[in-house]
Length: 202
Length: 202
DNA sequence: TGAGTTGTAGTACGGCCATTCTAGAATGCA
DNA sequence: TGCATTCTAGAATGGCCGTACTACAACTCA
Image (tube, rainbow over all chains, first blue to last red):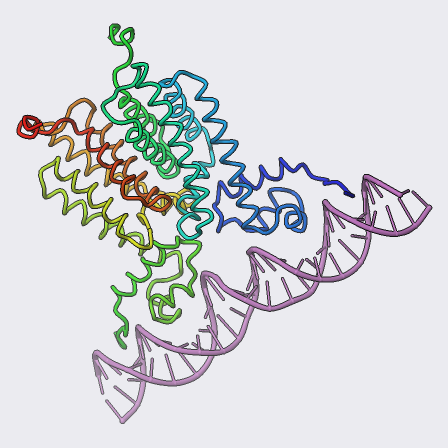
């Protein structure tokens, strides 16, 4: 071990994530990355390998932090509220992001997954992880009666996954609050009528 | 007027659509287009302008043919069947396409719409057109009692739009029949119970 | 202190990119 | 037939791409 890094590795990786997230893989050049990260291209190559490897690191980090943490955060709540919180966060994030970057995972699912087996697997695994979150919540909710049993947990979870992706795509092309919120709330309606308390009030 | 075109304009445009559809805008090079269309780069520039203009023509044509025609075809059927047919076609197409190209409109919604106002508008308009198809079908179905009134026509239509997009994205990352078919059928379940005949049988 | 190691900066490199130019071939019209 | 016009082919162009190389700076450890 000799000379230590001069740059903040987390900050640089975060800057790289922002680039790829915003523009995608192809449209992001090494020059863009150098400009955004503030370090030289040699340092980038030295620290992360080539562009593809840097993208892989960026995507993995994004999935682990943005998505993984959201799942953990939401899953702390009771099942039904966990799903509501998840959609709520997604919609809020989509609307408050001025760059309209959408979700880096969804963007990658379209851009890099189809023609690259490695990335297809990374994306598919992350999607399965989200689906797993939904399944766990729905099963728990169906067990304690807070979620309807009209559909199987898996069917409903996969439906939610599709809606989630749809929201993320629409966030980039039609970023209107009413649209995204409406879609989320019609999805949540599929959870079934809420408990007796709320029902009685209406 | 002098020397006429030597190439089949429809065939060339179709080849260009295939390129852009499969790889996206950025990842498709003029060299790719020359190879796929079979005509020289000079002819491409002469006939369609630059790469961006060719993409615009390709996208417009795609929307008009692939999507416009599907809407017209499906809308010939009664409202509920129209929606069922629409989802059925999408799922079938997604699964039988060996290239897993998904939908060129959805791909464009993520790749070119966010950073290009012209294309954002083109994509948004096309999405509104699909939404309009759903709204017309749902309103008609709610009027004749074949579709549930649990949600407003617009809310359900927008929900369907999101699910549709979700299916198209998943088709590129997780192209499994059971997944896509399951999502479509859980969406169709939102149309509500079918007519008395079918209900009585069960 | 100095030898060894690793990070950094700048630059050079070959290749491919979109685009344009040049020359000539094919057609319609007079 | 000859002129004007349009299409086609291929090469040329300038720029940017990702990447590798070279020289040097900064640190650890003996």
